Image (tube, rainbow, N blue to C red; front, side, top):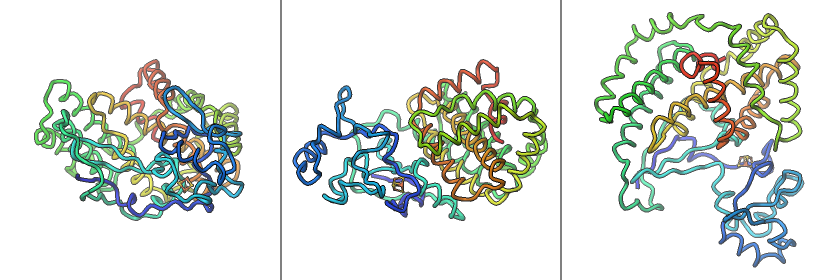
Length: 382
Ligand code: SF4
């Protein structure tokens, strides 16, 4: 089996009790049948009947949370199952997190989810993000894979989008995102016409890598966003972030964000956002890596490639909400330190990962405002 991932994947290690957050709070944790049986066998050591902390939900079993926490999580945020039985007793959900694997024919892709603060921290510390392509001997290839051509096509498009973000030419995040979006839209148009030849799309998007065209695009997009429209748009999308299943600290941050946007005018916002940008100027390269990782892990959409467009807008929405929260922290505390920024990004990701409801609401808002395209995308890249 071929295995494709970012280099961060192999190096990742959970920091357990040193984690500023924990992945065992606020989520539906699925427990497989095999693990459930083991938990029944080990009830005496764990000092709790398995049925007390694992419940049936439909065809699956999930952990019965206690005040949003997994009951196996001790006060020092260490897992009782690991402590008393060993990590080999963890369910596949727990032992895999924050790693996610997806299989496309004879290729496995490995991703890391940003809801883990250690993933965000490591990505911040990196200076360069590389992709690893190698062999994985564990998983067997599926016998036949009907979407091999589409996977190759989408992969070529994804590489082009990643290259736009990583291009060494000096470009704003706006321009990079706009170009990547343009590549994606062209690729989706061709896909709808049944033209999914990877070599053809490579040629069709080659212009995106000419320095003169890039510079022209940068000039065209400079100052194109009407800040008044953006401010109105931010006022709308903040309501999509609810306080369900959040830690107390994050709930408070959401409330503070709502208070800020309810009580400040555009003029104040423009001053504050400029201040945030000054404080954040060291994070420019991290933002590029953030987008590259998301494009790598979230963009493929097989078999319905049209949905990749939604996925891209969703990446932008997560980024936008993280910037809105960073703005408010910066206003309230006069600064935004690295740990606060990591906390914001990982908690936003936690709320938004696999959140179909949020995605639907976001797309509705974009449609209602007639900005479900480049205009909406640019509004979200603060
Ligand atoms: S969130 Fe990440 S670092 Fe923290 S406990 Fe979970 S896997 Fe470990």
